[in-house]
Length: 251
Image 1: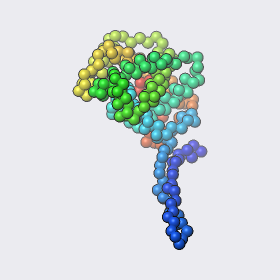
Image 2: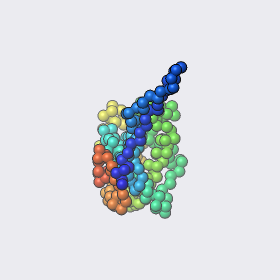
Image 3: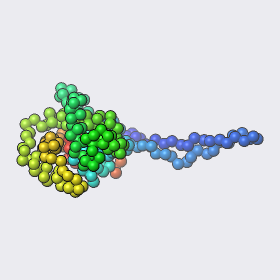
Image 4: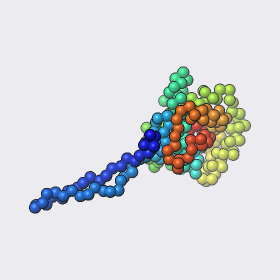
């Protein structure tokens, strides 16, 4: 029964003894209060998603301030991103004819652009190694973890772009409109100087491309849900049919 997967990993306190000179050691009663370490919140095609996975997803979302703005990084949204990502990664493994791999140089270049775009990074100078390491440490992220997550994200985006984005073109006017309507207000709200249009143009182009393929992507993901098995075991994390609007289907 799938219901059997709703379990808690519990650890009871070990019995302790206090030897005396005239009596055998007496075991103390074990703690009656279980320590909940983790629990299953969803199953995606046989793969288990844990509550700790959701917490980790929320933690690393700081690397994507434009696609996961403050206030939208909720447990439900994080869980939905994980589910969509699991579905996409499975398709990537199945469709080996699509070359979605990215080079180390592409990852480094994209991370360098990211370091200039994260608002808080402008205060601690993430363009320097010291500032970047400070930012990562303050958010509980290692440099290796950041690189691995960013590589995976780039590979997912490349896969989606190849599969759905062929023929889509983003105009300069669309980029300028997004910059003025979204990027500038976001930085002004935090009383920070916005980055130049030129410096964020590749990132905006990426976001706008994803917005255009979202309708195709949404239908595709819904089809994958129906073909496979997506079960939300904890009602607090919403239904599997929730919106798939975030950038890159959860990348």
